Image 1 (cartoon, helix red, strand yellow):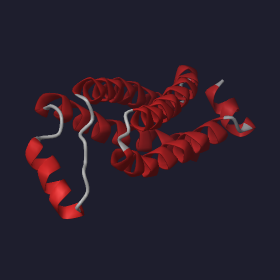
Image 2: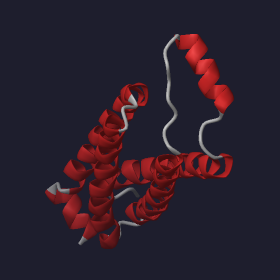
Image 3: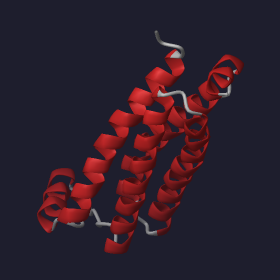
Length: 148
């Protein structure tokens, strides 16, 4: 019997999202920064100058997302098992996830990478929405009781 639909839904979402994000970030680390052919084709298709981000930025963001993916995977499994540490880990993960999203937008602005900034806005809003819903759901009294 399912004790908490909130834990079930967010646990499954965290596991799936962590696997997808982890795979994408690891493949980015293996392949390296955006290739010149991709940048060239994007310039031609859009008719604008697109600057690739610096390699240090690219690698640091990929490493951050690999770490966040590992934490999200462990947290998702803990949510499914209704573990108290998992609930606390979700709060930590929410803070880190929102922080990385904000730092990403600030970094893109400082580096004058406006095309990437506009592309990152959608991900930023999805991140804020997801983690806000996660925090809201896990702070409800009936959900807190299940994790006690």
